[in-house]
Length: 420
Image (tube, rainbow, N blue to C red; front, side, top):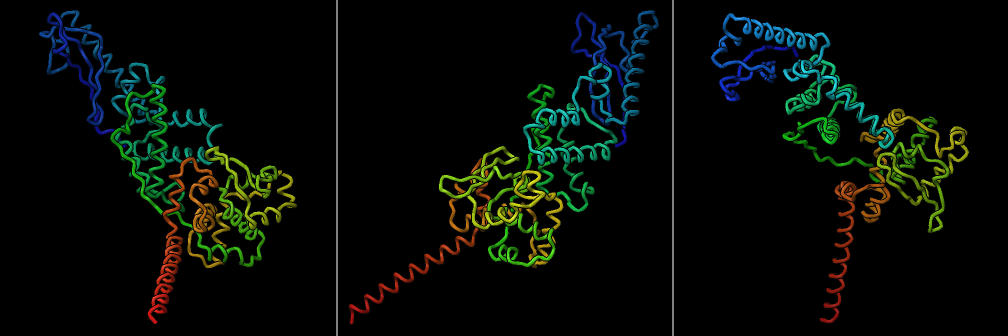
């Protein structure tokens, strides 16, 4: 974004005058926004030319002071040009920072991304770190397209920056043309920026929270899952291509365990052990939250583990299954959806939703148990799935209707018998 205005004016603050002398300030204005700098000089109020912003008179002291003011003006212009040459965001605050020599000490937004990575790279999952990288890429794109700069000081973050970022991600071409950013995705990007800002505030690198007036809003959406019939169709279909057969097996395994993609392919034979009930369980931890999960194996999941027990690729890496990249397996699942005439956007993560709804909740497994099986840190997360099992509610009510109707019928039969 080109700078529209840039100005430097010297003035005195009469309200701070002492014994007839007032301090001199430089006011920097960029695009209508102002900052002031004290130049650490005082002057007799009557000796100040308010129209020209200079000392008036012809004596030697006046000449020395006006020469000093012009030197400051030149230095401020140099600071402005320095930002121009570096293609950095030009603001009055930025010029002041360079002039005062504090710009190297001040933290920037992109440096915060790097700091966040270095501090949390061992405690956050690869997927979460990747998401922060994507957000950083959108910030870089926004800064370049909207401001013509490569970074921004944390002190320059404000409400308008956030509003502009939201609009930019929404209206401009996404980084991946195949995956445009929807409202909740945009909010997730802003949520990550907010976490960086909170980190900066805790470290006392930022005085005020630019998110104070910005309200994030997420739209509620139902989690898509497979019905019992759709899951059976995928299980029973005959796949002539090995890669599709493998993709189907791993997807079905997740449907009957609820284990996410990254955790599925991190499983080793050591994660399968005998449980307290004499049956096989999977014991692992979710990479996303480091939350431990204990999952009793259902027969279909056991069959798939047994099928790949002797797989040479899996054995060489001490894994339960040979790894397929997330991108590839999701492409294969789209082929499977076409072959099985399933119109839903079939992804590996849908298996987890299917486990929560079709396999467990719909079959009467208590929501507290499902929450444990999924490795959720809060039951509120699991309750999202409970909202989409109306079929189970309908089935239960139909059973109740039948029972009540049977009671009424028996009652009438008894009354008719007694009357006769």
